[in-house]
Image (tube, rainbow, N blue to C red):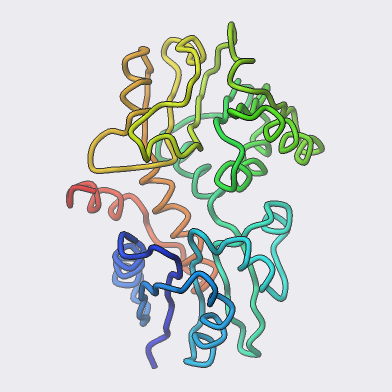
Length: 274
């Protein structure tokens, strides 16, 4: 019998996940169907229950339901527990919901495996203090950078988030106005500024010459942040498409016990104009 999986969100029509997981299934010989499901903003818990009653085996969760999925999970991975958000639900044979977050591992694999970066000893700047940033802090700190600075338009949110993760490594927080005179080997944009084709209000000196600029967002054209980093003389730039595919691969592995190859899927999406 073909196993059923889906991604739930609102909006959801833009999701690449059905294509990605369909290709993963073809590549690994797994018999599964993967759908995108639009869920009403006040109907998430009922939608998950209904999916489970259909015989669904697992779910990806996207905006705006990651915190609700965390609350709904019967048990959670340590990384999801700390992040306060879940983007992957594994539905057990007994109906129990195991919650995990694969965003951080997806970013880390894109940075280290696909881009070839060694984060140990690096000075890293992480822009933003929302759920996207919270979800990637633990795996980044596990790489033992020299320092990791979270900068946000509202300084208090950055310092509070840094305090939550201080036991894991050298992490601090500040406002954008606290970045003057500082330089970093890797600057990661986790803000939503790109939705307006804008760059966060930060000084151009934050990226060291030859450093790497990474935008968690992606598009058919280079994002505003990627363009900005290139103008500053970045040695390497990337958008978040690789992160998207890598986090999907981690979810696939949690569900199926098989780790798909990501390079051909990333290349295929790029070839399709994503």
